[in-house]
Every structure is written in structure tokens, then in C-alpha cells.
Length: 362
Image (cartoon, rainbow, N blue to C red):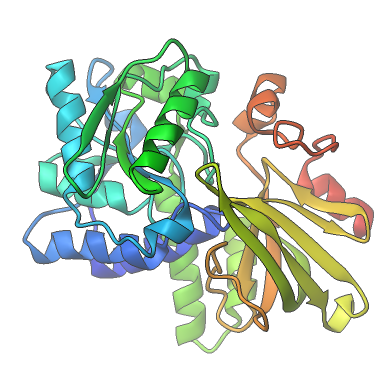
């Protein structure tokens, strides 16, 4: 077990936003929530997957909805606690720990506050290794863990307990509830045992996020390139460099959907990159050629600072660099690609690992 301090949280929030591929919620909001828990005197304790007893109960906690709504309708902080308590009370068992469902700026840091305020540790793992827009897009689902029973809560103290026949129905019904809540809900879901956790999770994602954020911070402190430091720490790839010239973004069906157009500079002058997103960046295309696609990670960063730019924050004129990071091997099976590959999102694209795409394009 390790205990996080303020600097750890600052680093983790930056790294989680990188892994969040443009989604996962506002990293600044999530960071403030976790730091507030520290200032209130709570300890934030993180445990490794191997430390969790096989018979322990784990309940992940998260935010659900449209990122553009969440930054306009800032949570009180009690919503996610209400959801977590409702589900734990329903299950009638002592909860050993919570954890993130995904890697994302807000969804990696909000569970820190939940664990701190509930007096339980946070597991250093998640169910995506990145962020995805739908509840069933997890390695938990791939390994047969049900989303429900789950609980949803909002800022008006509405709380809903949900039990569905399968994980796709959980996504559809929970999404409708989230829309009724005003576009944002705070959820507790995927209750599982420690044994299931060890089989189904992607371990070490909080630690990875913290290392990525620390690499950027230390490079800036030492007058070195934060972009180069990040690429080395993440084993990532430079995909494109340029200036944002157009953003199309709309909120529909409980998601932020759209695309970002980036005009190339330096080695990419004369080219245009299109990044299409559904809460998260899904596919990057240059001149009709796919440069990267889900489930691999596509992240847009400020060109000078390497700070990630989320899909709700991309704006005309930003100078940026787009990087790609290989996904967990758990996402490369046929079953996993059926759930979160490019064809699921409607793209007529056969998934190929970003490492192979980069070899072909140089």
C-alpha cells in the first residue's frame, strides 16, 4: 500500500488525462476533488491488485455523461458518495476498496476522493487502460463481470438502483437515466470479488498515470522537452503536429460527438489530420490513411507544455501534437475488438496496432 500526497495527485491527473484520450472528464475538476479530500484530513491509500484478497468486494466508482455538461454543471461532491453508499448498502457486504472504471482525468481521480472519504483504499487498476464512452467497453465485461447491480446519483439527491439482464442493457438504460439527470450522473458499478479483479482488470494504470505526469513535470523543471519525456515514458508515437483549424462538436444521445481538424506544421506541412471522437478520440486520419484508431490511444497535447487537451477543450488556433500509445494486449482479442474496435463505432476500418501503422508510414 502507498499513500498519495498532493504532488502525486497533480502528476496522476495529468497522466490520467493523457491516457483518457480526450475523454474521462475534466482533469482539473477531478484533481481538485482529490486534493480537497486530503485537505479535509483523509488519507488516499492505493493498493496493488495482488494485495487484494480473493474474497474481498470491490466497487468501482465513476462519472457518466457528456464531458461538456460536466464542466458546466460542477458536482457538489456528494453525488458519487451517495451512489457508492446506495450500492454497498444494497449488496449488504463490507466493501474492501474502490477503483477507477477507466483511465481519464476525472474518472481516475474521483475514485481517490471516494476511497478517502469512505475510509477504504483505491486499487491501482482499471477496466480500460484508457477511456471509452460506453459502460460495457471494459475488460471486466470481456471477462464476464456484470455491470449491474449499479447505482446512479445526481446533484438533486436522486439515486437510482439498476439491475439489468446484460451489460448492453445497462449501458442503454443508464444512459437514458443520465440524460434525464441533465447529462451527467455519478455511478457505482461492476461490483466484483478480488479473484475476479485479478483476472479481469488492467493493473497498474494509476501508477502509470502518475509516472507520465511526473515525467512531464520533471522535464519542464529541468528545461528539457516534456514531449520527448512523455513519448519515452509511455513508449508512445508522434502521429502529427500542427494547428487546430476547425472543431465540430455536438452533444447528442448523452455523448459529445464530433471531429477536430489539424493543419500540419514542420514535417507535416501541407497535410491535414482529422481526429474523430465520441467523448474520446477514436480515429486519426491523414489524407484518407488511418494513422491510429481505437482501441489504441490517441491524445492531443499542447505543443509546448505536453498538457493534454480534452475533447471539450479543443479550440481553434491551438498548436498541438497528436501522439498514439499502444493499448493493453487485452484489447486485441477478437472478442475485445467486437466491443471497442473501430467497426463497433461505425468505421469501415480493420484494426491494426499503431506500432505496425507507424512502421509503414515511417
